[in-house]
Image (tube, rainbow, N blue to C red; front, side, top):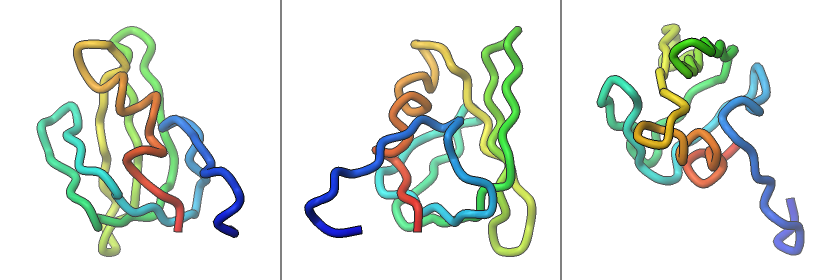
Length: 91
């Protein structure tokens, strides 16, 4: 991407399966796990549970499947989910 092109913005439901992402701004998930700058993983899929506004992002990290759980509510991780491109970048 050239420097003249605007940065692609996306929320956490718009990740591309099979693509690798790197954390560019630290964030905490629903379970209180901190995802630090430089952490990277390959996106597998996401699952949304409407009843609890739960969003589970399945990733592969270091050859192991892992999940990042978040809650799409203002008092939880809504701002992170809505502005996920401020927290991760596609490699």
